Image 1 (cartoon, helix red, strand yellow):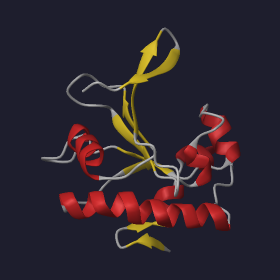
Image 2 (cartoon, helix red, strand yellow; image 1 turned 60 degrees about the vertical axis):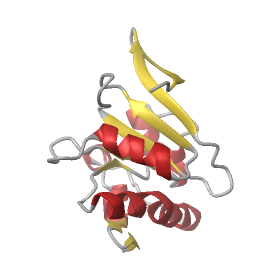
Image 3 (cartoon, rainbow, N blue to C red; image 1 turned 180 degrees about the vertical axis):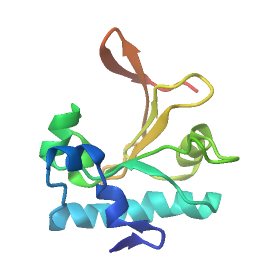
Length: 154
């Protein structure tokens, strides 16, 4: 099933951890609707701008899967409203370019520069929640064993 021209439901629900542990990772009707909006309002616009396949490393997460991976208890991934993108290994397009395109051109709820260094994040987290797009921009960093989120000042 396509969520947009270039994004399938399978791409947003694929999880090696879910497969490994036998965790069901299927969205309900509301979550599926959210995924379609996210695909149209964010993913497809990124895809159209760069003109190359965009690699989604995490999309929808069932509550059980989110718990297993240690995700936030209020994660937009569980609502079908968030995707993580990682363009590592893609010639000519960096995660920083994707991050900056989203920051400068799209509407979103939350955009996170996930770890990495000052030049390039390890991946990009972006969420879109219809009616609640506050354009919060954060940077994830490790402090000891904990992940903390700070305002992005890039």
